[in-house]
Length: 104
Image (cartoon, one colour):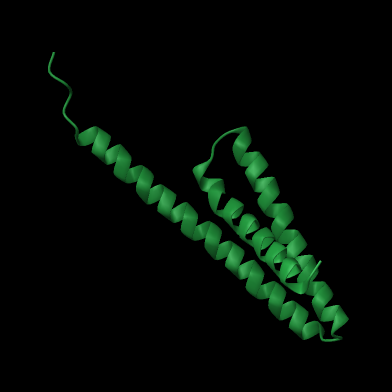
């Protein structure tokens, strides 16, 4: 496999991991558990790979910096997605409450 292919699959894997992380607040029930497990496994594997990069380069500070940035990105992605979902839900509930009942 070429370097471009590896880079493309790595980027796709990271995108799927972060998209599943963002989808957690928008799902419900058993699907939420499945999506959370997928996101958790993806983020953990990304963190492990970044630690491996630090070990391979004999620069543990680099590995820890990469891991910290990825972890903070994951927290921010989840928090922002959760906040947007809550605002959207409140908007829909307010809109439903303000709507007058249909005439009988």
